[in-house]
Length: 131
Image (cartoon, rainbow, N blue to C red):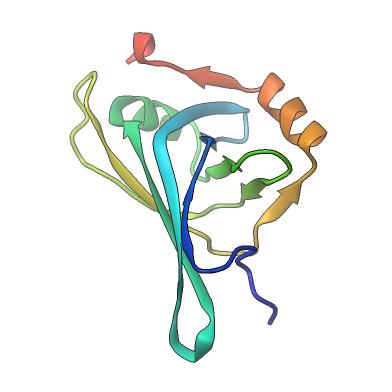
């Protein structure tokens, strides 16, 4: 199997990260970063984290079982991660944020910048005024 992670070891700042459902509604992750480390056998592993408004994430999950993650690392580095593993806080009061951790479960899809921007233009981002 080929390597899933398209970057070398290190910490990378994510300019924009969005969890998106099939209906093209999304929740933004703030202050997102990804960490790439070398695991057993020299294989690269990746995990990331970002802050999310828990109540908005619950609203997104009310209508969808599977979420994808859109990642913009700047310039031409835009990706879609299909159904990543996600773990987050369990406090759902309005306005509460917690860190959400994510990791790929399958290879990332590199998106052309135009394709990524077209997708971003179509989605409805849930915001804090709605939680």
